[in-house]
Length: 191
Length: 133
Image 1: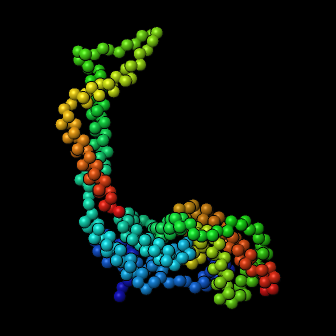
Image 2: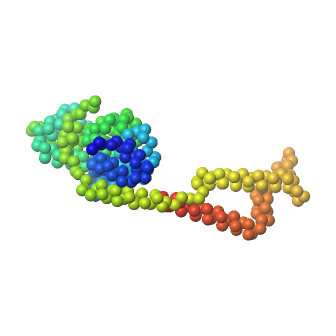
Image 3: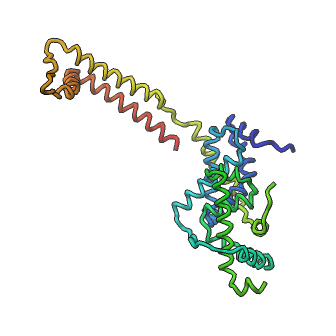
């Protein structure tokens, strides 16, 4: 069967056929859930935030001008929905530590992480990511997991492109700092 | 093309959690509900743009009435006192006095009728807004 574009389904929905929204949900459900999960860090909250985002998108579909990609427009809804949910619940711990890592420290941490087995690496990365602020987790998710360009992330997060670059740099450094702290100095040296 | 650093490679390896199986069904149930709601959505009789026009028109009318009454007062006018030595600021309050006088002269039935229409239209507008949520 021929795959239809987002624009086709959106036009169908706007013509009064709500069922045409189903392929859109099917296409973006994983992306929406993944971003919500990185922000809320809780499965139930992430599912609810992603569902709310789809309903909000459906309700405001008329305001989607079509100039920007639907994906960007929709991601912005997911991002704001998940962030406001997290801010309401205030259930997260954020590390405010200022990391002063040298290039060697970063390299050592990278090597140590690289030589771990996949399971251990995943565990350490999850632990380190849990100490990031929701916005920081979101920016990593959009950049690395969703592979979005900086300009698109800037639209989604309502920031300037240079601001996104600065935030990405700081978040990366913070994550390395967390990993460096998690791996004992002896462990880092041992690899 | 974007260059992916080592951290990116590690992060990409992380296992992704999947949504529940009935995710799409749950979203579509809510979407269908929204579709039904929007079909029977209550539309206000007077749009908010028209409300602003009515408000502006009423204010203009009121202003014109007060000014006309002030500058063409008829027989009972006392005029405005103004001399170089002392300025009488009572003219500031005069339009308001005229307004109250004018309001008092209107028949009670007319005032209550206008107020009732305003209340009904406000309720209509409020209901229209509430129906959206």
